Length: 309
Image (cartoon, rainbow, N blue to C red; front, top):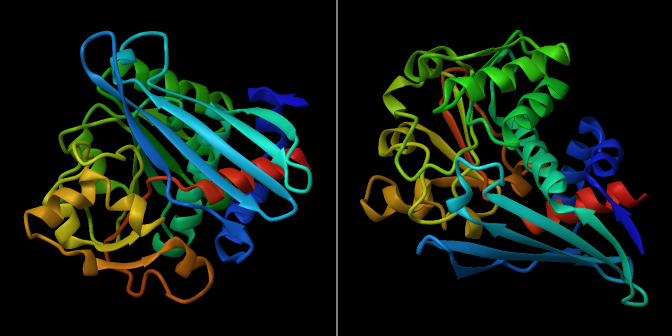
């Protein structure tokens, strides 16, 4: 059985190919991907974490399942809050094929999903990216977006300024025009793309600050008590999701729906419809678009298939 560590997964999933693979998986009728399972897990500090199981397969080719743990009690320590492993099986025999580093696979496919969505929803001339958050996803978001559009400015904001500075320094070393943001509100107002990758439970992005034509990418929240943007953002934006079932579990949509600010019918289309050309995406330059990504198993499978070819 093959074992692919983080470096091997990274080398085998270059951004353009990975983004294309995720798009192809969305419109491939052969991919089966049941809704993910989310189970509560007790934590040492008395809080509650999550175990997520995300299966997907293509009959007679490959079966895959990603197991993910979310332990918010790890925040502020050297241990990530999200940890994952991916197991791939032969679709003809059922034998185990490989174990892949799930953290790297998740970070890369998540960033690829956002970059793919932005290709339909962000303005074509959007060249200023703000990444809110400083975890593993933060530099990957910048890298993925930079792979598909000519960014001239990348800002990184985090609750800890030193963490934002470190992410920006890493990206600059790779030749990207990155800098740390000292003022989140000001950065939101000037960015063409705002990508949030945090575990926030209180809104960080105020919708009133979004400029006309901005694209808001919400990635971090996946439970009803988690949210990265406020009701005003949902009210002002044209809303798109990666999958409806997953996105509705997030507080970014669940809470404004519960308060009556928007309804489930406010969701214009999912990413599959965008990739298949069934919805045009952005229709006018000054439109504010919102993309809620909760992650989906078909994207994991797409990344694993690419990595194992």
